[in-house]
Image 1 (cartoon, one colour):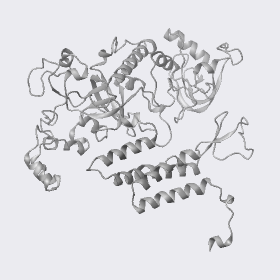
Image 2 (cartoon, helix red, strand yellow):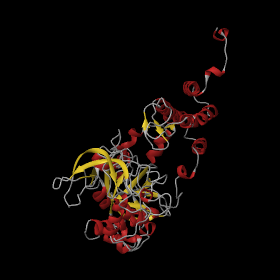
Image 3 (cartoon, rainbow, N blue to C red):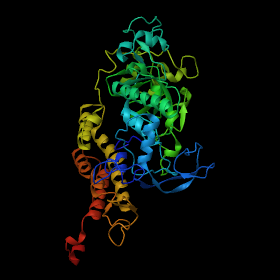
Image 4 (cartoon, rainbow, N blue to C red):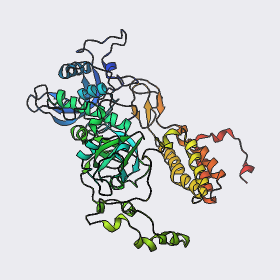
Length: 516
């Protein structure tokens, strides 16, 4: 989430620009904390009732210890100072700077317990919209590795079931090549460090909030090796179970092509997230998910615990697994034969599906010095503006003889730039308006011209810049790479539509003969 958040707890505008919980209990005139029983905020939140003592609250558990029942959503007055004081006593922790949210966008507006925010802030980890803690990495497919490449000792790798190398010899050296198991994952160094902090948060939560024994007990990052994770792709709702077996210095997640395909990915270059299994089981809730369309995306609603090659994208089954290529392949290439015509002479995964060898005994054709010896970070992240990214992509297309740069330019324009501008143009025309002071949303600007609640200024939620941000680069690319007349006409029509909306036609005086 941007900016990062420690807890899904609503503060309204009391949290200030940084949405700090301490601001909701701070005396603005003296800079000191008020009496905690005196400072209160008013925010829309879920209304719950205790069936034992009939007390109304927003908390999941009543002060009498009984679990409450959701009955609706209403504006409630909350004593944030009292909550913080209670959290301090229960957790036996000093209260750090905790960042909450302005408001909840779930159907029942169920907030997290503020204690979770205290512990996340303590360990410097942040929460996603569903209550989980995540780390993003670019996908890289991997089928084989050497123990020395992933920072894992021979003893530890043997404990995880890697007893022999890919040739069937007993594993004795960190230089031997080992075949990766289908659901094992090699994370980045920054990821395993973040997962270590997450594990400490989970242990604190179990021990201090739920009165249970800690589970992970990490003393160093190596202690996270062997623990289970969930891999999840954006815009999906199905996570895949995995296991951390090591890490590299590359900001990438190395996993089997089957694993990436099970996340609904085509294996290479996309960016997905991982989360600790226990964190997801403990803190994920549908009650936190947005009520808006698409709110259930990016959430682990279901979990695949075992990958079946029959159930993944068939693209991953085209993986060739032989130790070399036959002469017939090169001869077929000279004749421009269709791949299906020579498929029978190639060794690929598809032929093994349903047999004992569908998961193992894969081979490879080329050795590498180190799996992480390439770029440590994707150029998409290191390059700044979209113009820089576009120029880099097209300059690469010009250097590769097998690629048509004009076709690449046309595809980027038609599948990315134009749809983005069309969508933003539609959003601009149907946008809401927002009060800059109290954040109230209006479908139309009030006749008074100011907020009806606080007389604050009304501003747009979508601005001209976001509509036309890709127009200039789109025109430059279309002209430089000589795209088709059809594509160029689409670009010019979009330019006319944008100019018609944002330019004042009355400025240009015209006469009747101008239309003749």
